Length: 282
Image 1 (cartoon, rainbow, N blue to C red):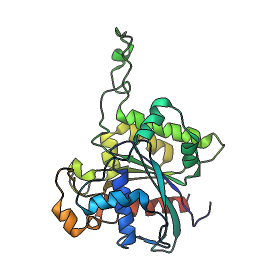
Image 2 (spheres, rainbow, N blue to C red; image 1 turned 135 degrees about the vertical axis):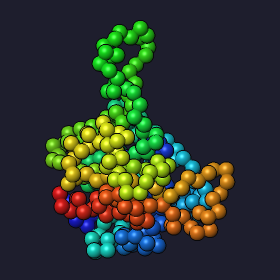
Image 3 (cartoon, one colour; image 1 turned 180 degrees about the vertical axis):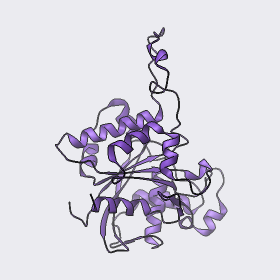
């Protein structure tokens, strides 16, 4: 792998905040209020124009259509001089849901998985609740005959996410590849959890989604896995009324990341920098 070129694949179902994070991340980089700076002005920022326009007006971005997949290439450099080429995607989360449901992967998704040096899995804990499923029900319930042949066992949100990661691993290793790309789990919309400061994201993941935490922790290990909390906007925006403070101050002044140690920082690029570090030392 070329040390100057790191490619990241971002995975997340609908409503986890992929577009908002991409727009805010780009604004942070452009204003140089983070650890990353642009080396070259991006040739095409079209995928995030609408997102940033909406945020500048104090409004949330609209949902990315399910059929859309666009990429924007950002050539950046860290404060330590490491050059990175970030290929940041914008796509409808329904595409990920379809991957899980159909267990079929098109060539374009295959290429994204194979070419990535690091994977980011965005999970919104409030949506990915720990509901009852075939993994958490008592064994007696599982053995009990089902009187309705049309009713299928329900998979919880975290079981779906584990299945997604298993599909990614299988696709990656079918070509005889070695260790899979490093993994970062972003717990998005952290502000809506209303947690006290100092909570470590990995502890919150283990508490809310123990099945997912057990899988990623055992499969990747501490040296190739990082868990962060993310609030891309810092607050919820309404489609009915613009947030005046958000509009007046500018979206680049909102949002934060919760580090692995539980500390808040306004530098939204921290997970990207951490990925680069893990890739460099793998």
